[in-house]
Amino acid sequence: MEKSIWKKEQYEVRNEELLAYTLAKIAPFEWVTITMYISDSIYTHPPIFCWRFSCEDEKIYARLKECIIKFEENHKWEMYKGSDIGGHTKKNYTIEPRIFYEIHKNHGFGKLAEVLGSKYSEVCFKAIKDVPILCKHIEQFFCISHSKPLLPVLPFVKKSEETR
Image (cartoon, rainbow, N blue to C red; front, side, top):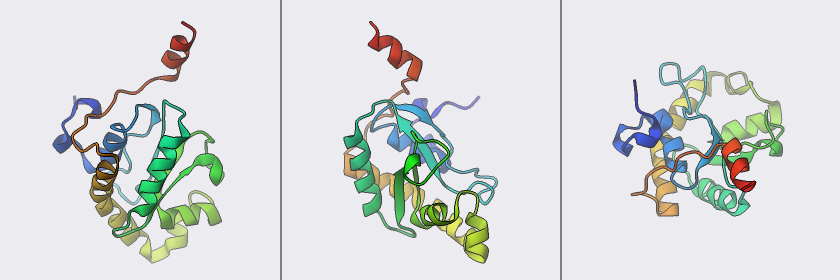
């Protein structure tokens, strides 16, 4: 059985888990999709990362968004809250290539391959190549290069602690 990302050293973390590992160094998650894409089928599920931290401090999200929009390698990237563009959930945040964000905003979800057409494979491949560079950028921005990921804080634990 494979170790969870919280017990791995950074060199053990697979590329598709790297953004979860990196963001867990900033604040604990309340909800997260650990795997950003499916490595055996990168075109079935494009590289998109969804999560929310257990804390509701908007300053952390604002600072992270500032970091994300400053990054540019193969793609520019975007961070947004689901409620900003009619996402599946109103509470979760998403990080994805800006071109995906624009398509989701203007054409709805599930339309990436259709809108991008023959460029879809190349866009996904380049986004995946950006992931380790984006994570390094986040680590430098937040000064967390040598930090370990923080364990998640589950909602029911958080609520029971508030009632003590």
